[in-house]
Image (cartoon, rainbow, N blue to C red; front, side):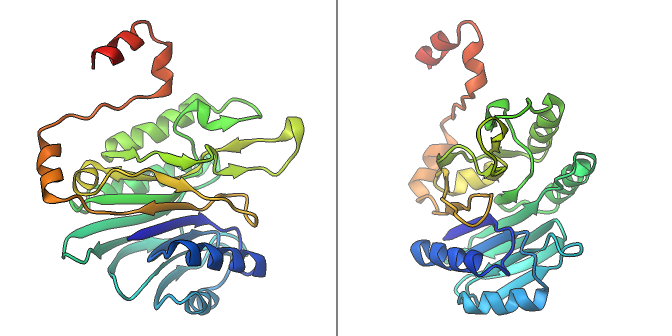
Length: 267
């Protein structure tokens, strides 16, 4: 199953609609989560139909901004569990009957409001034991090197995001493609880019599904990149083997510590 997440920055723009349709034609996505649609629920349902999606849940934003939506094909079962202006939480059923949870998140962009995004994630985390995949525009970075240009990111904000993922038992799935998913559209010294959009998953999800980094796709209509995740279940022999082996995770910042290279060689 292919899942696409994109802060599309306005689907009322014909160029944005054409760009989304082109991406869907190339990748055959079965479920799509969109942020900042900037259209009404009625308009979003019409757009979903034009994109050949039989099902759509759209949530209006505040005023002319915001708006989120989840679209899915009729060949997958999706049950919406909860939604707000900043999230859509759903349970999906794979062809073999296994359950998977998919949550789309649109993080508060205002620093003073970010705490509400983190509270939301913590509340959602305790509501289901299904393998969980969470995607969207979190409007925050996980590492200082996920920002280039401008002033340094407040390390406290980064740590708050890292802590909430830890508390929720979620980890970043990684990425392929360009390292940053958003830019401010300015030039030279004023140019800033960050990795704000991503997929994160629970341990139960990584045990059940094949490890595969999300793909950051190109965009020519939004200041955010679309992010694509290909979901493929592990074979039973792969699941059993994974239960008896430990996985090593490495973070770039560790390279500055003495003895890091020696530890990696030993492993």
